[in-house]
Image (cartoon, rainbow, N blue to C red; front, side, top):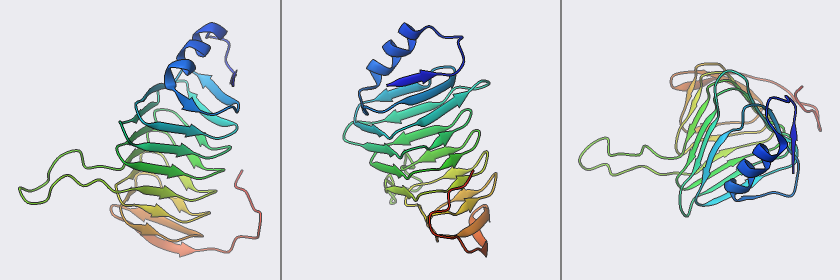
Length: 184
């Protein structure tokens, strides 16, 4: 169910924390550093060999009632990733998510008196690299193999096989990807 890389934590501490998460996973979860702060009141599905690494700052993951969060196989989450699912967030396989990335599928409050609260699903494809301190906002779709540059704010559609950067993020260039290529 889990693997501790750093021996700072006792086995029973990790087992106790993971049992509270109410996750749907029979697969190993790798924890390097401190135990992620996860509150699950909806559906949380974690794939095989997902790695949570946090030596400096802790991860914060929230799945609200009736919401769903899926994290695909072999996805790596670096220090202080914050994810809040109020509706639906799907993160594909083989992704690299950098330090202090924030992923929110809601605005959480009204921007104007007539706008209402925005809640839209987020879909992040496979083999995506999201650079440090980026924000992925409600209604975003990121295609397979894409790279989101550090510090970007992403809202809307980012196609497959491209590099996007900025606030708001825009495509800077496209690249070719051979079949079966996985980012290291």
